[in-house]
Image (cartoon, rainbow, N blue to C red; front, side, top):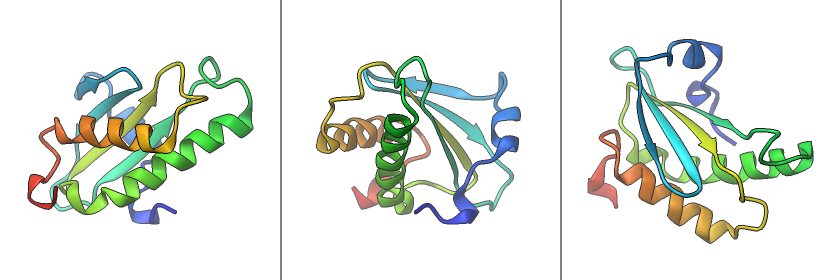
Length: 117
């Protein structure tokens, strides 16, 4: 489970309008926000009803993505907000593929600490 200090709440979404950088691949789209200096990284995951019809499937995908983000928490710099948007077609994708795709996408951003890779 993601520690409460790293949960991105409503303030993460309201601060994202027009002030963020976007990165994407075939499975995910990331939005990076600059937070107040010294804050721990904040994270949020969005799974649309359009991409996963049932709540059970949406929650499964969110849990998998949060598990990947927890593993990468030490590699993410402070003062960064990350919103992960999923794309269509994640229902049958294996966890290893999800992890590889998301970590590769995180590594392309400026908020990723490459020393621990």
